[in-house]
Image 1: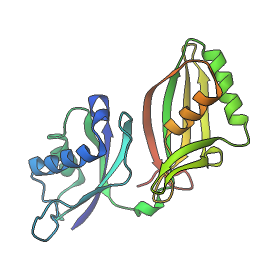
Image 2 (image 1 turned 135 degrees about the vertical axis):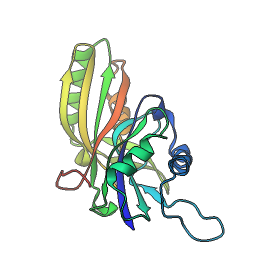
Image 3 (image 1 turned 180 degrees about the vertical axis):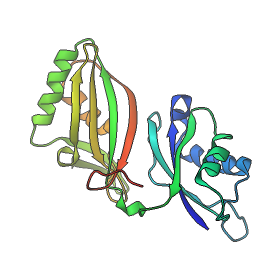
Image 4 (image 1 turned 90 degrees about the vertical axis):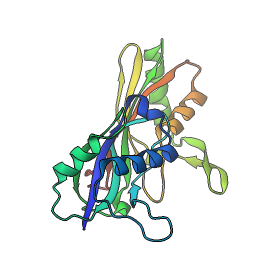
Length: 218
């Protein structure tokens, strides 16, 4: 049996597919591909597969992770990739297929890129820098135990912040994995509370899933 890890993209109209609908979508994709995917046992067998991380609705990504098992040891990674791509919906596509190397628990962070569109990019750039200079960035976050105030400053690592003249473009690392998951909307909400400059977030996308040492999760 081949323990397979596929990296896939989710872009365009596909960014509006919720995580719940993504599960249904992948179930149909496996059935249409006719790949020898390993099925669960029991009264209602279904293809066994899992996603490494959920992606927020409206976010794009080029690095989503899908794990599944193939019962035919002789199939090549290229055959598996091509069979899935032939039946994937619009906006989704398999970028890479390989044997699983690391456990899901190795995931520690994710890289995001997004734009803050505004008519006052210079002023908003200054507001972003001011927020980042604060000793804390408190934000209310929904948890299983209810709403909790957390400080996202220690776990937010801004890689680039650029004033383009019509937007402020940002890339950052945020924690991801089995323990803590943040996404850019938390930072954006914190910024809204600290500036009166109007802006709209755009093109939020996950660009990498990483281990603690910043290497790409494989």
